[in-house]
Structures are given as structure tokens and as C-alpha cells.
Length: 279
Image 1 (cartoon, one colour):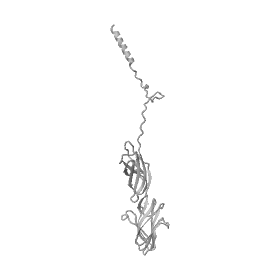
Image 2 (cartoon, helix red, strand yellow):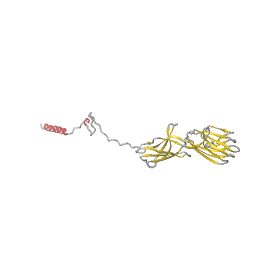
Image 3 (cartoon, rainbow, N blue to C red):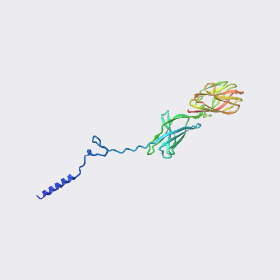
Image 4 (cartoon, rainbow, N blue to C red):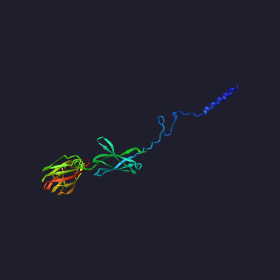
């Protein structure tokens, strides 16, 4: 009889304690500010991601700075500036392999970079490239097409044809004696002339040194193919040296000719001739 009230009191206290405990809400009742949707579902809204850092590369200039040795100088900018001394790559597009090939490199100073490379005459596409450098990803410039004109031996691609009058002889010095393929001897008998033609496609200028080795005066001239009127000419006295230069834009077949003016044996002229070409 005495234990019943105690049990009843204990049960009553337990019930009161249970009633005072907070009730955990179900997951469907969770709500985050700004995330409520009309269908009653919810999702957390994350803060906007920061914009990824961007680096750009640009070619600002390409020039042939030495047409004799074939030096190309490329100037560019990299922004934002990489660390000073960062290696910047110069790529050239190779049509035969259809791939970009690194042909040179330079080192950045601030946002600027200057790259000088030696290349044969050509018309090619170029671009700058900087590798990944935290926090920036790799960057590549827009390609630029550049026509690179370089002086080369006039006879580099051989002689198309030769001829003349009075036993003409047009002799190109062989590669083992004249590796630049620029030297030739032009001979004919008294009252005659001699000529040789080369393919000058892609060329814009001609220059030559000449030495008159005969016993009289002779005329050295260049022609647009077989046209009789000379593009340029020089009259050379007996046993003297000279130079002849001329633009040849648009001339695709250039004729070099030596003609007797007044001599006892005929014209005999030795030349060292060059063309300014992209090939």
C-alpha cells in the first residue's frame, strides 16, 4: 500500500520530464534563409565562386631584323605580368606536319617579352605561349602570319634555262666551291652575249657583285624573263668591279645577262648574286 503512491509519483515525474523535452523537427521541416522553394523542398545556397584568374598573351610586332642572316624579332606582351625571367615560348606552325613547333624563346621583363630567332625565308604563322603559372593557367596568343624575306644565293634552286649568242657559257660554281649557290661565270665570244634564268617567285629584290675579267667593256643586266628591256643594268669597264641592285616585285622568272660592248675576246663576267626571298 505504501509503494503505490511512490510509483505513481515517479511515473508522473517521468511524464512531466518527457513533455518538457524539445521535439526534434523532421528533415522536411528544415528551412535556410533564401532557400525555400514553392514545392516545399529546400537546398543550401552556396556563395558565388570567385572568377578564375585569366592571363592573356599577344604578339605586338614581328619584323625581319637581319635579312642577311635571317633573324626574326618578335615582340609581345603577357598580362598580368608573370614573374620576371619567366620563359615565353615562340611557336611556328609547320604545314607539313600540321603541328606547332617551338622555334625560340625569350624571358619576360614586366609584361614585355622580346624573342629573336634565325629562320630561312618563309611565310609562316607564329604565336606566343606561356605555361601555367599559379594562380594563372597557360595562355597562348592569337597566331600572326608573317612573310620573312631573307637574302639567298640566286642559284639556290638551280637554273631554269640558259642561252645566248656566240658560244655562250653560263656556269654556276658547284656547291663544294660555292656553298651559298650565288656564284657564276658568264662568257661568250666577241660580239656575243650569254644569259641564264632562275625562278624568282616569292622574291622582291636582286643584288650582285660583278667583276669584268675580259679585255674590254661589257654590260651586265637583269630582265623580266625574255623581255628585251632591262629592269636594271651596269656597264663595266675592263678588269673592274661593280655592284648592281634592283627591286623585282612581281617578277617570277629573272634573267641575268652579260653582253659584249667592246672587247677583243668577248664578255667574261664573274658574279656573286643574291635574291631577297621568302623561299
